[in-house]
Length: 340
Ligand code: FNR
Image 1: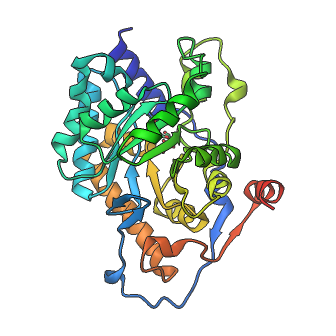
Image 2 (image 1 turned 180 degrees about the horizontal axis):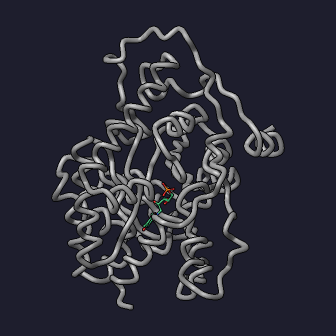
């Protein structure tokens, strides 16, 4: 199998693997308020998250890297849908494009299609400062995501095993790069200990990349015979991870991982997130139904989010923070043991 065929295989598994039966956003209920008092037309969707300005709290999260016609077509279509709906977009890991110049086109197309849009670059935590700067330059990116995917690497036979330079490299990038840095997980969530350490290092933006949606343990396990299925349910569910990482007003948390719709996004914001990302479910619509369907779906998600704001009398997304809510089941048990 060639490298680009492997990528497509990966994408197929990522969008088709079985999701967990229970999504932990179902453990959160926003309490209905009957007396809506806003004019729907007046509701604002734009947000400021630390040093970042976004026209809505939803963004397309990092997916698909590497060369090949198909990944390029996916990035092109994601970029057009992001432009049509005015939302931000992160690209997939640029690590291979930093090593192979021919692969750059896969990423550059994102900026070409959306010259004015908010775009996040993406590198692994093994990236050097020079590589991080190059990744930002490649896209004229507005921010840089550094992804942390230890378990995924450990499950892949060809994955990285040496993380001894990770902290030093992240520190170097935070200290010297001139765009906001978002440290992100890829589906296992972040704990308050992780958030604390990153905060001490100077990180001010996190993407919890929690459990509940795309699950790289399951993706990797589908691709090989001797699988590590014991890790299929490893990780911190996204709403739980938002609660864990909301440790300071100036640590800005994005929720991602298993966000299914605008209401899940609103729940994440009630719990303390400043914005929310979606990856696998948007990719699935693009691959199965095409770009127009994706654009429609994004509009629909934003509309759902706005309805939740209307019901809570929240004129701006940030006003959702702390609105009356109830926590049930697993999430409540976790909360009681860890946050009280
Ligand atoms: C991803 N994700 C990802 N994240 C990252 O930081 N760099 C990357 O290169 C990739 N690649 C990637 C490929 C594919 C096909 C998918 C579906 C996802 C992870 C992604 O950004 C996100 O954190 C998780 O997918 C969880 O969100 P969802 O998919 O549950 O909405």
